[in-house]
Length: 200
Image 1 (tube, rainbow, N blue to C red):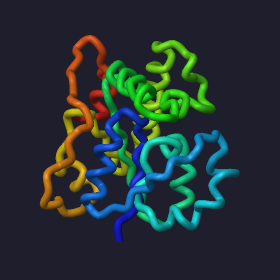
Image 2: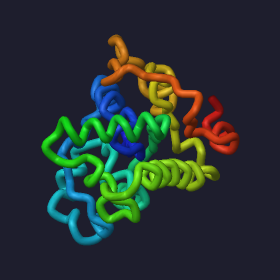
Image 3: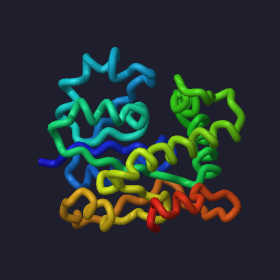
């Protein structure tokens, strides 16, 4: 039986492609949008707890901000974590563009209940995005075998994911990214400290 997989990356970091890949690997992905509450796991999750047991993958928000509570909720199951990361400037532009395409404001959704908000400056939003990724890396620094880091546009293949989850590679092409990856030398998510964690 497949264990739970929590994708800790924010919307706009490649989680849609990852969800498609996991579905092709036989995982059942939770796709229902839930409101972002700081106390979600304490006061707002009881109606869907039973339903959650039928799913293996919980991706992006609000799960990425409640992964420690999910660990406790499914403590008897094998849980692994994936962090999708992307160049911060490209991530911001992707989410900003999504604001125009969807009926719900993506930036507002991502930062609801956080120190940053849709009204915050571009710089503040990118700063919080970076801090989220770094905090996850730090959290798993002593338990690195439970965390897989996938860089947008670079790790889109079966090998790393299947090896990490200990499942067979599907006899299918890996899903294509939603948009083309553009390399940027000016803006780089990875300091030397993070590069060492990624082992790219």
